[in-house]
Image (cartoon, rainbow, N blue to C red; front, side):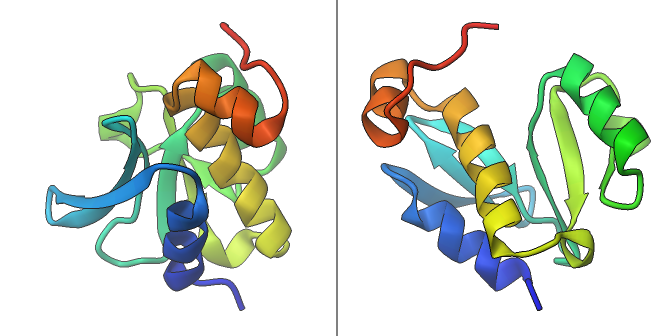
Length: 118
């Protein structure tokens, strides 16, 4: 079963990622920009997600994705760890969030694709 240790392990495997505690929880950053947090209960994590995509994710899979009221105005979405299909899905979600925070040259070097500017 996937858990918060898997989130930490995969996040730290991404290039130039560092872990830093903030708000009494682990956060993961690339080039000083946060791309994932793991709240206290460790049953979910939060990642970067453009708002227009976030609404589609939540509508398609509300058991997996949601946004707490205090984060409604942000470009972040929460992911329920227990609802993930497997480690590959977890990795895809984390790489996508990392790609939104990382410098374009680093994204291109790691993924082989030029990052979107939208």
